[in-house]
Image (cartoon, rainbow, N blue to C red; front, side, top):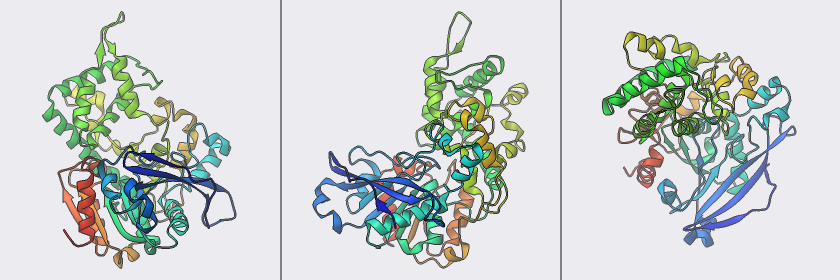
Length: 441
């Protein structure tokens, strides 16, 4: 049984009342008498519903990632404004993120050796997050099931939740987060690289000058060492990672404005500007969320085999992504997206101290299942999922295959939004999913 171990702190914002919750939970739920960690969650209630908040049903929000803290709300905009009209919302910092016993370059050395750090982080996948949710639900709802809204990796967690604790869910809502139930990391990335190429070429079609700008930057990086203001070493491969922006609704425009400010004249000739460097560093940094790299491929590992830097290995099957080689051949520089690579441990300051830990996790075997296909096939929980037709991060074919495998799941397939649709579309997306789950749309 979880216990609140800190007094509730309640504050007010325009239109909202926020209450802190901190829980003491087992690191390994199979060994509840062993080590514990603290898990933080923020309760959000509409100000005009605060007096009768105990009568409101709960909605649990599971953030994307892995390794990203929950949203920090300011006011009643977006999907949250729609949610608090009828729910008492819980924004969970998944274990290792935000205020939930954070796992970073500063804290992980407290665990001991890299091997001990890797053993510790093996308990930070979706199955453990679901067990945390169930322990918290028993404390907060008195045992009543709650609605779960999972964005991206939060959707993966929701499918795990439906697999192993469906009794805890009244309704499941998933946005851009239907995982393939059986595909390993290699299959995920073999599907991902063609999407990355498509997104890059679509960007160049919108902003033709950016193909020239990207080529100039790669040519410069091949001949010059550039260290960004935060200490990131910007290599051609690291520059290509800016393609992660193309997964967001306004990402193509953000990338364009970033590229147009790349160079300034200096006494040493043209160099990358500090303005450009600051923006690039903000996109590439993993200092506050190293789990995004350390555990990214582990979220696809279910067959016991090591992931072994899958994205890096699979990339060699797509030679068009060799940026310097592309220049030599007169081809466009292709951007990459949500892929992790061993060289990141050298060029990104927030990951350098965790280099050995990352390699140990990549070599780790024995990963267990994250989904129960048989349970999902007999699912009775109302489920609605937004599938973004041109999603950079989650393959549409994989998502639709899973949608067909979960009994009763209703899909909304749309190209109106990118992967961040629940934020870009705000209340409209959440409202559509709620009506879909209830059979009203």
